[in-house]
Image 1 (cartoon, rainbow, N blue to C red):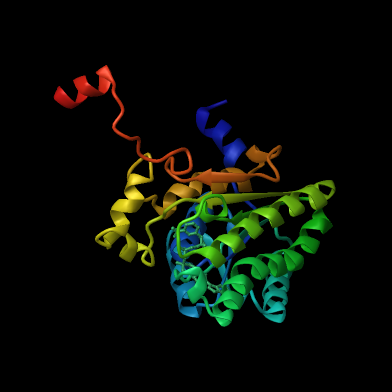
Image 2: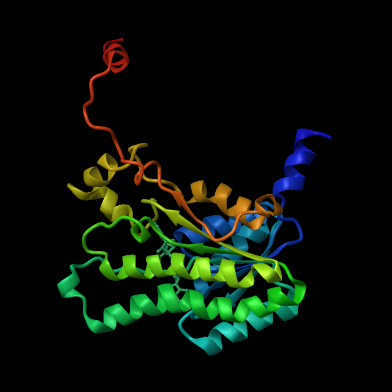
Length: 276
Ligand SMILES: NC(=O)c1ccc[n+]([C@@H]2O[C@H](COP(=O)([O-])OP(=O)(O)OC[C@H]3O[C@@H](n4cnc5c(N)ncnc54)[C@H](O)[C@@H]3O)[C@@H](O)[C@H]2O)c1
């Protein structure tokens, strides 16, 4: 058997129907395009109708398959309508990818109650509502994979992200419950926790006179991640290659939680390299 056919057998998403929330965003759009490129039929969900249309055009023009569903993850009715429409159209949902999420960076004492509720509703309750709507469809086929996007802030904390961090810790906790409760239905659930990823929304942080350097110093690879660098792990967790992987939180952070860029330690090898 050729390398190509071995890899295809392991990682191909051909024929899989994937429902993704937050698909029109910086990370969602890259994951959706990449998963479509691996053979999946994408059911892209987002509040942004325009973003969804642009994404569908990009996927279809590359020969992929994509349908768009306007969905507000905080609204149970909107979630049910979109999920049922996708399940009716394709007769199945094999993979759920919960990407929708927001943040507002401000100090703990500055956060208004409305802001707290909004971040909680989208990031945490949204994952809950969408899973409640999708999983009965997976149970019918006794198979499924759920991928929840967590964050570096689920484990380690920056200042000014209290509510966001709490929601992402909650997403990782929900992931464990999903894995434990639904294993008997053949459904797996894992979280991907990206570190600092460069998207149009985070560009200002990387361009900031102090915050960009602060972050680079805390990343072993000394650069932000690109959204497409999350794709390999997402394809693995969506594919049958991850059939024994469930209930875990996979950190993808360029060596941030590992310790970041090293201090100025003594090493003959480093000395030689720097003076070569
Ligand atoms: N960018 C990073 O550095 C980073 C790092 C770790 C985790 N994350 C997480 O990755 C995910 C995507 O982040 P991103 O950087 O692509 O952000 P983004 O703002 O580019 O994308 C978020 C998407 O979610 C959609 N959305 C917002 N509210 C919604 C709602 N109520 N219902 C449905 N869709 C809604 C938005 O329209 C947008 O398309 C988020 O969960 C975020 O917390 C991002």
